Length: 102
Image (cartoon, rainbow, N blue to C red; front, side, top):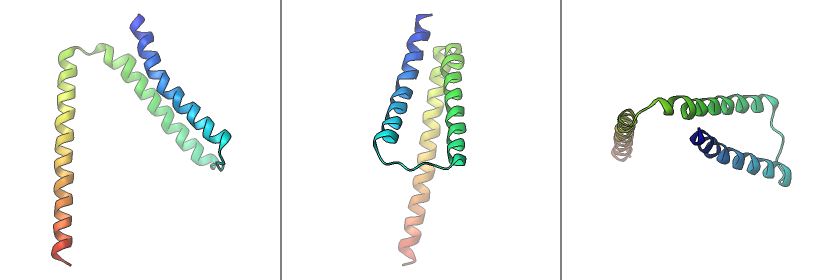
């Protein structure tokens, strides 16, 4: 049960730091007010992000064992590598296309 509090505070500290930074910027700097629609969109997306992160940390991670975590991280690493290969090949293709058609 003690690990839940440790994870909770590790989860809470960066969020509180972000809240204090945003409050400091709003209070001590000249920041214009945003439109209510923009505020609502950001509030909804940030709330969904926080709920998803909380579910990941407190529901999904405790159910995983070491083998599943290893497989997950390996698959994530391979997907990132594939993504970088695709992006770099597209970038090289367009640079070659621009150089040829100058």
